[in-house]
Length: 120
Image 1 (spheres, rainbow, N blue to C red):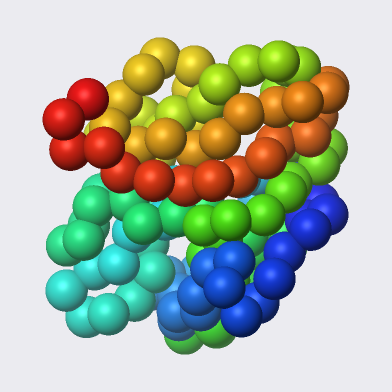
Image 2: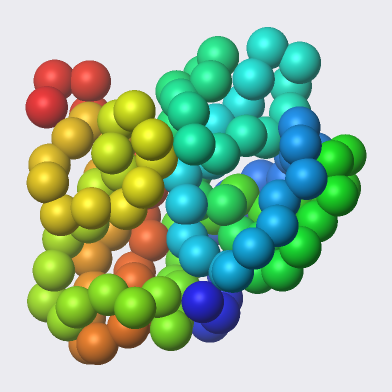
């Protein structure tokens, strides 16, 4: 995974990590917990609010970017597909949920336009 286009002014926001983030770089749903820290793997206090953009290991308390508008490449996705977050785990999937992530326009280029549709 690599961030290709991202405007730090209006393409997302920054938050400290609640716990260390290790392992392979991947796009994952991010939420904010009741301590105001970014978490992955659960919808947290806020529900999912964007895509975690931390491409390498990070310690608890490190400030990370959470993308709501941008482009990610090398994410291992298929071209011409719409993506959502799993409402429980935050894993990117093709099954529709209230958490719209974005779509691909070519193999491995995810156009992130994160939004929440409470009616879906």
